[in-house]
Structure formats: structure tokens, C-alpha cells
Length: 164
Image (cartoon, rainbow, N blue to C red):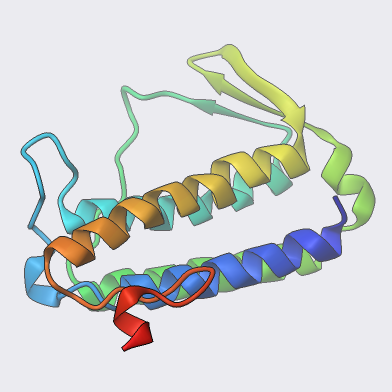
């Protein structure tokens, strides 16, 4: 995998995700399809967190995560969510632009409370923790939109809403 291909994938996936996030009804951020599910706002906020993983993956050799002290990001409004997302994506673009090919193969580790849970090349960690994670939750969010009767934008082709 080349840096150029990762940048292109990041650009495509973040633009696609932005189109989905902007469709969330501002008055439905607390809606959830099931009591065990994230609310729409919490799910969208988590998607922003997925993009944030790019920073520690490419600026640190490891991240030692402590779930006891972690406070998840929770947007207070749709405007805040979209603004934070745009800022996070922009910061990620700048960080990716400053990388070189060698940085992709450098080893990165995720520790949880001091114990190594993941150790792999940065490019693989980025694809897993940022891109694939974001895409996974974007799929969930598309179901939320469908259940809220909001037209769903396409990701890799048109949806039933876009075909007419």
C-alpha cells in the first residue's frame, strides 16, 4: 500500500462520511433504534473519534489507552459535530501530507492499561482504526437514517433514494 493510495482512500471515505453526517436531523440526535444502541448523536460523535485515531497512529510509536479515564467525545449539536468533523479531517489531511512512504511501515502499538493489544505497521493500524472503523459505523448510521425516513446518500454507488 502506498501513501498516495491511503491519502486517496482517506479523502474518498471522509467525504462520503461527511455527506451522511450532514443528513442527521438536528432534532433527532438523541434518537436510538434500540435501547442497547448508540443514540444517533453518540454514533456520529464516535465516527468523529474514529478519524481522530489518525493522529496518534502517525505521531506516536504507541498509544496506551485507559478505559477508566477515557471520556468519549459527545457533540452537543449537529453544527458542533460537523465543525469538529471538518476540523479533524483537515488536520488528518495535513498530517498525511507530511508523511513519507517509510512512515507507513513503522511499527505502531496500541496498549490497554500497559498491555500491548495490537502491534502492526502504521498503515495497517490506520486502515483498521480509522478507515475501516469509520466505514463500519457509517454503515450503522445509514440504517439509522433509513429508519428515520431520511434519504440515504450513496457510498460506493447510488442508493434507492438517489435512483429516483
